[in-house]
Picture 1 (spheres, rainbow, N blue to C red):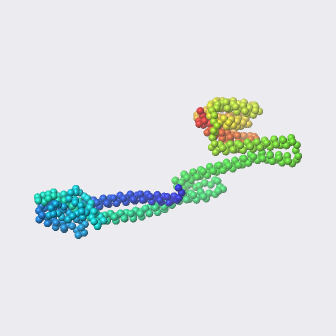
Picture 2 (picture 1 turned 135 degrees about the horizontal axis):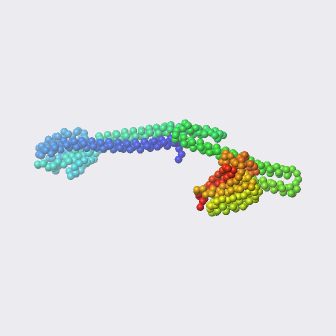
Length: 457
């Protein structure tokens, strides 16, 4: 949902104000209405308490003249209060027929409402029965009170409530918008700061010191994203430079050899040698491209899918047998220690182990022993290759699995290879949910990778 946060907050303030003011207004109106009803009931009760004893003590019609005069004197000219005495004997009746035309002589005692023609508000009645005494029959004494003044007060109060509530809601919305704009000022400053970052300087970061606590976490996360972007950019620049460097040599060889061959007439055997040399360079370039595509797939989260249940010792033996010519050239012996059954991609395992063995054979001391260890380490299976060789500085150990990384002091003659072997080992480990490791201690250099428990049986 798009839109201004300030307007959303102002709307929420207004909705909250509507809820609060409407609830308060309804409660106040109900309270006032109940208070007015109580006031009317109290007035009716008071008039009954004064007149009931008077009506009860007069028995004869002659005495009822005094009652009539008393009730006439108590009836105001605006007839806000009216009295009725209902009786089967006309001598004891007063007030005439009820305005609504209903016979209330048989109704129960208590409060009731009577609608009066030509009046907007009803009359509130309080009826009581006066027992018969002597010759006087039972009487029904009714006192009526016009509710118009009370309802007028309630109506005025209601209109005032509506007006003040509307003004309060409007004021709450305006104040909410202003408060939102003021409160979001740090967000605007942060946005302006982010927009002002120069595009060519990847080391620029947002200033988090002056930000409120709620925005510091966002700014820190944004700075973290910038740092990761900078790292990725540096890696991409290094990768491009390394790829260009690795491909430049075979391309230069191809161009130079071809130019030399075209400079003079050549016989068939010379052209065949040239084509053979060019083919080798092209195969090297193809190997680099294929390896880079493989690494790109692994880094994008690709997982090993062609899994099979194998014995690591048997698969390691097959890899050693495949590399036997390379090992014999330096009179190297390979010892395999340990075994376990694991669900792996057999082809990828052979490729990673072959890279580790080739790396060990390249830098191992002549006529030494290379050890392949297959160890179960808790929930992981570790595959490592150790060889006797020159020690490797700890500064280089954590970088040796990076693409095209060269530690010349520790890895002599690395220019003969394109520097992706150990990177492929890391990719294979990642595709199997594992990791890589490298150690150099006591004359032994160890490189390996692990498989997580998801791949263990």
